[in-house]
Length: 367
Image (cartoon, rainbow, N blue to C red; front, side, top):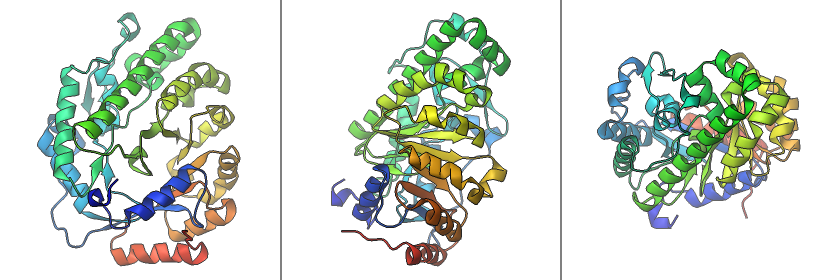
């Protein structure tokens, strides 16, 4: 990004540190994503509660207000960048809706069943679809709202097999894996191809029609100067390693091969049973650790898992609760290929103190 397009005063340093992370390296400390409340910003959060949000999900002005609030209400420190992703449909709806489905809200978005999904023609990407055009309008409004201050990334999406489970129901999909595996594989592959087509379309739209530079923030987190996103299979909690190899690994090959970098969104510690298989996907860059709530409270109990992940040559993106946790875990696994997101701080002073505490033990050493 040219200097006059920078959205952060120390952006060149941020890019240097993040590039090292994606390469499995570091400059002496982990990459840190740290934000603090902007005490000079007084507007209230415009986010609509989930049960009432459906009417606003494709409202360009609503997204412009949200993105503006996200950008200006926080101060972005260390390697955090003011990059955002639209959160319509709780980040669950994009692939199912573009595939022909529908959704509603309860506490979160809920995809409406479409039990005949496998009897329908396989979904293909159509850039002229009304939902695509409406989302483009929302993305354009969001980019205009923060031009020069922040940017947007292509949408976060769930995967094809999980989408099938939402359309068909978990029990029906489990039966389908046994009774009609080829049909399930074809349906999942078509949905994952659609995933990639949607991502490519909006990445290109943001870059070529909205004046973006092609940057991404992978799952609301690490900056990458190109196409980067989380890949996942939340339905995998129902699968054995053998089933994961049969039904998930081929789709991961497809989706990761069409990204410049990617993190597998490991949704639950039970998915560690798939780590050896994940390490066989050449284009997969790393793991986003997303454990159960109780496991998240005790990250030191998972040091052996973190070491296994790094031993496979995969980067590791963690959410930790304090500078002390960052120090303790970095002492165990080292700073290379490690990116940590800390909770948002109430003040810039608190945030700077946390960064300084980490850098006292792991000094940053840039050339």
